[in-house]
Each structure stands twice: as structure tokens, then as C-alpha cells.
Image 1 (cartoon, rainbow, N blue to C red):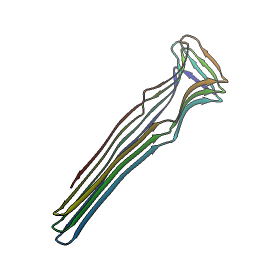
Image 2 (image 1 turned 90 degrees about the vertical axis):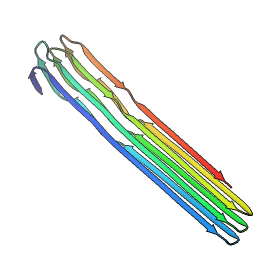
Image 3 (image 1 turned 30 degrees about the vertical axis):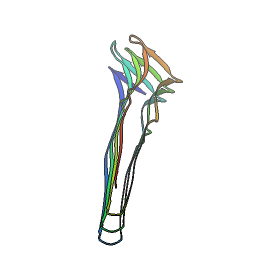
Image 4 (image 1 turned 90 degrees about the horizontal axis):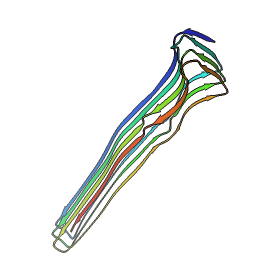
Length: 219
């Protein structure tokens, strides 16, 4: 039981942030005056980031009384989870021979997987609330993901005979903003004498993703 002359306010802020920068590089050079020269370069960058957890602001199984004309009872939760991720991979292979055959191959891959799965709750449950002003259960979610992936591969083969060059560049981005966000009043007796009752949940989520793959083969 809580009796107050004035406003009663409960609040929780759920703020989590991840900054991840992953870079991979490979260099292969082969030079020969013999029959065959071969070079192979492979690089892979993987960034995997997850934000999870549970936050709750609640009046649960309690009696709360706020007396006075402007005495509000408020339960509020704010979530702002951010992931800023960069994954970059680069590879270069050079094969040169004055002989018969030059073989060169380069491969690169950049993968980013970013996920938020938080549970954030604002609740008045199994409670009795009397307010001289307003009663409010509110939730705001401003979570965001920014993910940049880049993959560059270059292969060069030089020969006075046969020159073969191959290249593969791949990028993959998987970004998800999920979880449970809820504002609610349930199984409760609520009296707001002069301000009304408000239950609101607002989400402003954003995902900004850029993927770039470049492959260059010269023979």
C-alpha cells in the first residue's frame, strides 16, 4: 500500500548499445620462371550481435493512492537499443610466370547478423489505483540497427602462355528488430478523478543496411 500527497511515478529506461567492427584481409602473390605459377587468397569477416533481456515497470498487486488535484500516477518505460555494425573483407591474388600456365583465384565474404529481442513491459495489474489527477501506463521504443557490409576480391594472372583468373565476392546481411513491447492495465480498479486514464505504446524503429560486393578478375 502506498499513499502519497502528490504524484506517484514509476519508470524504467532500457538502453543498450553494441558497436562492432570486423575486418578481414588476405593477400597471395606467386611469381615463377618455371612452368606453372598459382596464387589463391580467401578472406571472411563475420559480425554477429544480439541484444536481449527483460525490463518491467509495474504496479503489481498493490494499492496506490495519490491525493491532490494534480496528483498523477504514471508508469513509464523507455527502450532504446542500438547496434552499429561493420563487416568488411578483402582479398587479392596475383600469379605471374614466364612459363606456360598462371593460375590465380581470390574470394571474399562479409556477413553481418544483428538482432534485438528485448522484452519491455509497462503494467498496472491486480492493483487498486486512485489518483487525484491522471493515470497513465506508457511505453516508447526507439531501437535501431545500422549495418554496413562490404566484400572486395581481385585476381590477376599473367603468363606468356595460358593465364586463368577467377574471383568470388559475397555479402550477406540479416537484421531483425523484434521482442515484446506492451503497455497494459489489467484486472485492476483505477480511478482518475480529474485527468483521465491513458494506455499507450509507441515504437519508432529503424534499420539502415548497406551491402557492397565487388569482384575483379584480370588474365
